[in-house]
Amino acid sequence: MKEVLTIGFVATAISPYFSEEQQVRIKSENHLKKIIAEYDAKLICFHKTIFSKEDSVEAEKFFFKNKIDFLILQTSSCSSGEQLYPLCNITNKMGLWAVPDLEKEGDVKLHSLVSVSHYLGIIKKILHEKKIKTKWFYNYGDTDEFKNKFLITLRSLVADKKIKQSKIGLVGGISPGFDNMIVDNKKIKQNIGSTIEETTIKELISLAKSFDQSLIDQEIKKIKNAASSISVSDEESFNKVTRVYFALKKMRHENDWDSMAVQCWSQFQELYGIAPCMAYGWIGSEDGIAVSCEGDVQGSLSMLLLNYISSSDKSSTLLDLATFDTKADAVLMWHCGVSPRHFANEDGIKWVDHSTLGRKTDKKYGVAGDQVFKAQKSTTTYLGNNAERILIINSEIFEHNNKGFDGTRGWFKETKLNRSHISAENLINTLNIIGHEHHYAVGQGDYSKELLEFAAWNDLKLVDEIPLVDYISPKDNESN
Image (cartoon, rainbow, N blue to C red; front, side, top):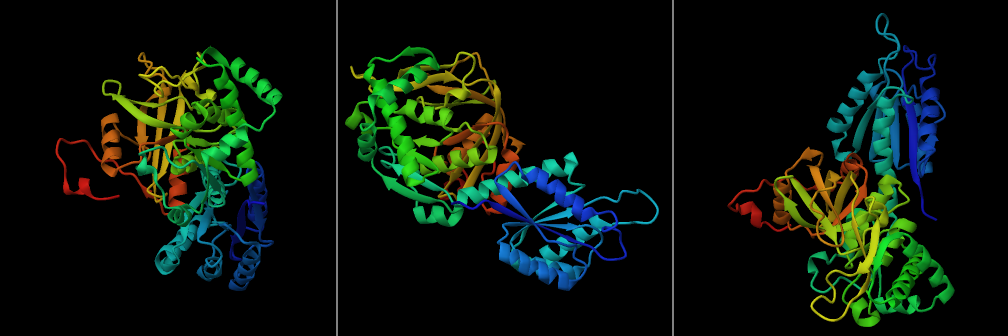
């Protein structure tokens, strides 16, 4: 059984102030419990307010026993420096929490904020070799100011805990020639904590053939009913691709994989005569499971990360950056037909033959999806370079008068890289210069703040903007 995020809460104070009289610690515990209750996390609270170094040592032993991932240290009132040191031995991820005085003038009753500043100064100057990562919070736990900031941390740390325990199933390896997607499994484990396990397309197809036909027929009815139109050349494609859908589910369950990276060409065409796109998209929309195409392990990890952070029961998708429109300052994100149907505009999803496989021949391969994405906020990310580097983009998907290339696609504008505006041309230049792996995990909603915080907790490198110019510089040819 996988462990959930464990958050510790401890409060410090000194006796001349009024934290106990105002019940700051007790009220804050109750607020935290309400916030955390909706997430895959548990809260462990120290049973008393710390008034001495001896109390801090007792708390240190208590939290060591309970294996804390993240410690929230609230200075319930002004606190002394000696109280901090034992608490800095518990974890390398800490939140420092200050609360305001209820009275705006006269005698200061709490003086909490100054102690957060005091403690952060000690951590960053005196204890810098411990490399403790910190975030500070302000205001009471029932205020939007506190909750909004804390929820970003909670979502990022829940995702961090989950991704470090995740197993990715790689089925069939990468598609031919996509060598920029080759990963070092040991480096992935070192950088992000995830484990990669491998099997073959032959094994998946063998499993696909094992299901009872009545089960397949029932699912095909659902699949067809979900489409706004169907134009697939070979009806048998629905039978085979639906079998692949069930095989993916069963293989994932039996291996306890959290997501999958599955080659989609060329073995499926050679061994089973299909394009498996519909199965990948259907498992994303109906089961919330991330399956990346073309055997892209980092793409699967990135999709999984978005799913964890958003807590959505609908999966993210994997796309290429196909072209751009300088006038609209927008980019077209596209793939052959794998995106789940919940991305679609009011025209819905269509089941079609694959738009490129078998082209210029008399052979057609089904089943793929065709859809234009509805207008919505989006987050794009990618854990690249063996999950050493993270791409963080938030954009607005809009319905362009240009529908884009056949497949599953959408136009993205108002693009921000690391939450700062970047033009379409500068974005493409940046990605080309760094040698980005050419895939992008895209999820619904804006979770760029959570991703930036996830990067901070894990010491991941960010992708920084490189403006487009008409010459190269020595830095352009550095390896990544």
